[in-house]
Image (cartoon, rainbow over all chains, first blue to last red; front, side, top):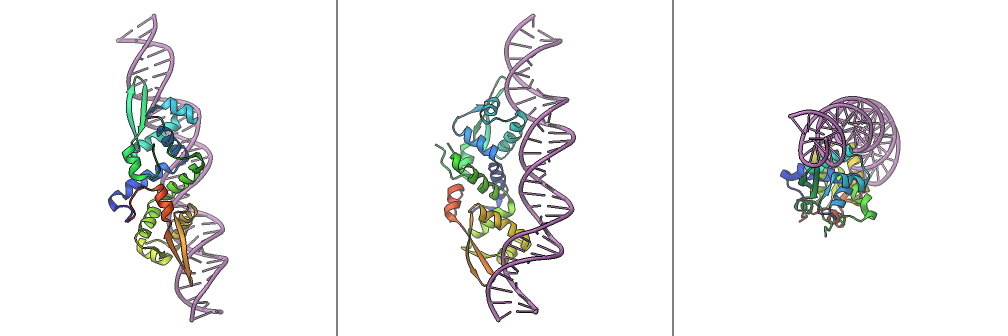
Length: 93
Length: 93
DNA sequence: CTCATATTTCGATAGATTTAAATCTATAGT
DNA sequence: ACTATAGATTTAAATCTATCGAAATATGAG
């Protein structure tokens, strides 16, 4: 058995989140940076703020991202490496 | 870096294919059976033939499935374990 | 030709993505 | 405290894409 029935929904959610170019780029970028704020992600990947927020919401929702800290109006995000390793086979160095 | 730019498209395709309940169930089922024909998959997962064909096409297209052999009008499918291991972290025993 | 298996086409429906505009939240200045 | 500003999120509407399934079309066996 590849996936336990209990985690089937979670797995679908995670893979659906990863199966979109922008979101995979966000994960990829955050794998290289420990943490980044929204504006930093927007600049690097050339997103509109609202578009990014929608994608971040999905990535938070499925557990692949965490809000690492808030500093003033800045929200910093980081990848949840446990979650990533649980589902994704690619190397995160 | 999580994903090489060159394989970004491929990764999106694979994860998009997995991020749908029916298709994840097909992969899961085929992980337990070496190979199965369309009718066998239809029966076990309760799909219409045409619906299954649509999903199989996507799974073949992204490389997660292979057509293992044809026997008469039967088409047998199997998971491409190399491909699965390249992208998916879950254990395939 | 006929039957069984599988795939493709096409239309309807549902779901996802994007963006502008509005709203929220925290900080700084007066 | 009030206002202004910057960063981020939410809402709402348009657009785009995916999914499903009936019907039509292949393909192979007998």
